[in-house]
Amino acid sequence: MVDVNSKSITVHVVCYQYMRLCQHYEAALRRWEQIELVSNKNGFLDTSANRLAVEVWYKAHEERNAAKERMTLHRQSCSICFRRIKPR
Image (cartoon, rainbow, N blue to C red; front, side, top):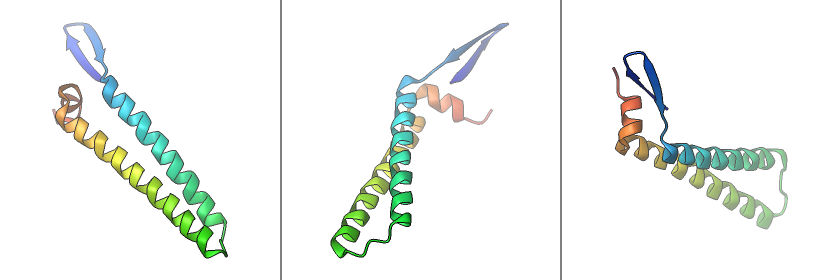
């Protein structure tokens, strides 16, 4: 959200695409955290279950990183978001 001041009136400009990207990132982060907790709790003895757990963790990790990268790229290219992070 960006504050745009015009004399005494303050208007909040929201970038809905960035908000959507944030929601995707938060969902990916929650999935990764859940998998991280489960994989730390359970010590799998079966190697196939262990391989599957590592594969699922890796996929969640990659999804989380990709979502964060999309947010970063958007902030750099969006005029609304760029004004928000630009030093004043």
